[in-house]
Amino acid sequence: MKKRVLVTGGAGFIGSHVCDTYVADGYEVLCVDNLSSGKRANIAHLLDSAHFQFVEADITHPEAMATLFASFQPTIVNHHAAQKSVVTSLEDPLYDLDINGKGLLVLLACIQKHPIDTFVYVSSGGALSKVIEGDETSREEDTPQLISPYAITKYAGEQYLAIYAEAYGFVYTVLRYANVFGPRQIPDGECGVVPIFVNNIVANQTSVLMTYPDMPRGCTRDYVYVGDVAEANRLATIRPLNTVVNIGSGEEIAILDIYETIAAIFEKDSNIRIEGPRAGDVKRSVLSNARAKARLGWQPQISLEVGLLALKKEMKLGL
Image 1 (tube, rainbow, N blue to C red):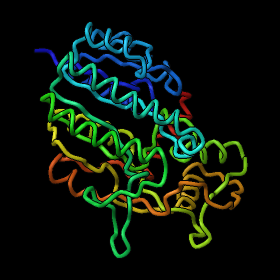
Image 2: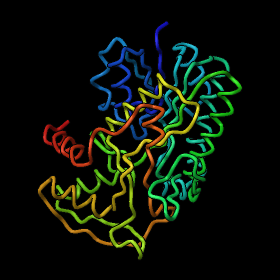
Image 3: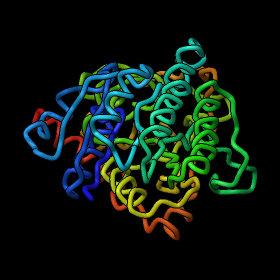
């Protein structure tokens, strides 16, 4: 039987890299994206492949998704489509709930009628992580801190998935991403802090560092390269674990350090202005990847510096 995977949000920054990996591995891939943040340019190189097809559709529309499930008959669902901004979730929690809550439930309803084998669900290690005093990293079994609607909807999605997997006989893996960076990323809020800084530094524009008074170098984050994330999706597809797995570097770095590293690699500099924190900002976020190493066979291969060099090369080539 052919391996048929439906990738929601497959024209996005991360989803398009995941589509690349599936096509390279011989999967039949249906990319579904409403292009609200995804771009056709991200998947243009795949459109001539006999193993890839793209449909512009919205996961919150039950009829459209039911039609796609009936025609494509996926054996795997990889769910990347999401409202991914903490700030947006605070400003418009109903929109966040519609995309992250209803969107998932529409997919799960389709699965009831069109059974699948495997589900890969993307969650947020950054928004859910809680680094306990005395611990170096956030582990999957730690109680998450739910301080934004985005964190709540992502965590609720994990619970829904576990219930439906048990009820309808499929296996799954929840991948909690750290802060992902790399080629094709767009500058849209904290999840895009790397391209925001890159754009500002290249254009000699002032950047803004939003942080707490007791963290003068900014909140800390865990950064993982998009190519490593795509590999984690490949492994989660062939080795489903029926549990949550952190996908991160395990290294904690202050956002001002990110800025200075980018400035050094791009051999430019610009001003950076300090402002107070945004509502919903997690102070520290760094993920233990011990479970990913032990059970998924995954560990990051690309360092921050090497990943930023790849980003610099992409910009020079105008990709």
